[in-house]
Image 1 (cartoon, helix red, strand yellow):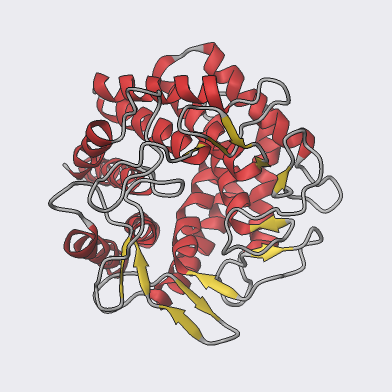
Image 2 (cartoon, rainbow, N blue to C red; image 1 turned 90 degrees about the vertical axis):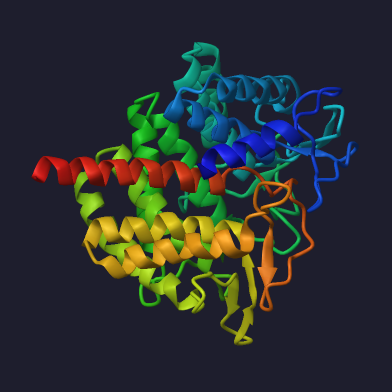
Length: 392
């Protein structure tokens, strides 16, 4: 099973027994960089992946790894003075980049909520709720709606709001809002708070009104605080990820009218994302509408999201050409992305299928997209089989 293979790699190769938590960096040859910084997003995603895998399989080894991730987050990433989580710490766990990136808080909520399902420890839930309240208190834009990207360590305005150097330095982004929605929805599954439900509903409306292009059905990536568009780049991976994640959030809060609307949009977004599909089944990275330039790279995570997004479109419509797209994504992954020698998935390949020289483990490379694809597909296939069985 691919899920077991992915998690086995992370258990065998990434646990930092000397300094706690997990190593911050491994290269394509599994070389460990012992002094690499450790990112909060990576650790939160590890927490989510192993918690979700335990919740699916009951494998106690996964729970033990999740407990390790939780302990390191609690001890080193939580800002006990100001609230929130640090963006990064050094290899020994000392604060490094102390800014409050709302994206990082959202993933901490996501991971903690999933871990709470595993352990039922009320302290874990309290940590997740505290982070949610920090986002509402400091980041929520009560004038124009949505959430400001980042703030300083003590929640003041910050000049550089970017998640990474490639991003636009703008007040609001699709990416942060997608994962705030994801974190809030997972929190709602364990904490059915009415105000939280309202915030999730608001976020889904923001996607409908601002982020999903009304004509193109591609996601807009960056905005100023008034939701004026500040980018003209298509991210095919984010398109297909949002095609199922926004719908999932609507289903979690049981917003029946929204679910009907979003299901229609989900298929439309999936169709738009298909513009980035190559004949080999792989999904290209980005397309710049201004320069007409396609980034001819196929990263691991858009392929994982394609597996889910197109299976979701198949579930909505019953149209088997979406099922074929999902299957072809997996065929591409097996052929070009799986590291059959050293384990896990490579970062990606270029147009000629040459490997990209990026980390196997790093601030951004984690067991989240690929393990989630496995978990979602297992659940959805079981659900489809159960539905067909009942029909027969």
